Length: 222
Image 1: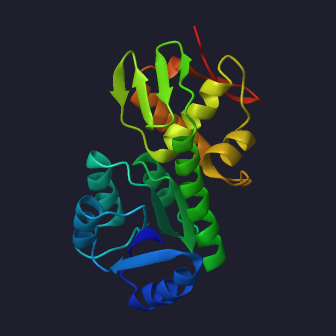
Image 2: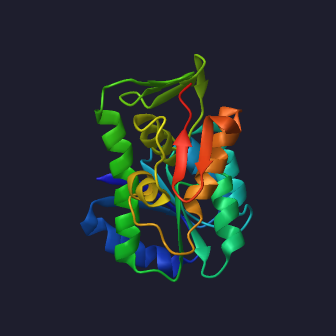
């Protein structure tokens, strides 16, 4: 069973999701409070977290900030439909993906499986990737820049893996979305742009990842 932490203050929605997700192979622990959710994420043994933005005591953003300061636990955020700001802020803070409410539980399962598939796939591939000052160890999910460890989310790790595999060549946003997010790129979806922006910031040198007009992004391998 996949251990899922659900931090959501809507008790009825939690009960519905627990009932729906159990046959899909998810053991769901539901918490209705932000502060308690952050504590559970940091102290518990979970494979993935589903985190609502609007929570009592601590907002979902504050919970995510606390978790990202200490753990690389994959996080899918639930946002209000039409609230682009929530999605952008969540991605900036390191969420792996987001799903606007209301949503179809089948899509939630698909998004969760895509996140977990990326994590498991990266962990099963042993070949070390190197490009310029970057070094990626898929088996241990470690990324190094000039020998120093990089603290990446699972999505950022997968995004960097795809770019390193194609170092020196542009990779389209559509391909990056399919490879790093496990889904096609939506018409107005800026998720890849936000993840690349976060990755550039963590690399400390925005020039390592170039924007290739009309083609996507390219990792500089000099």
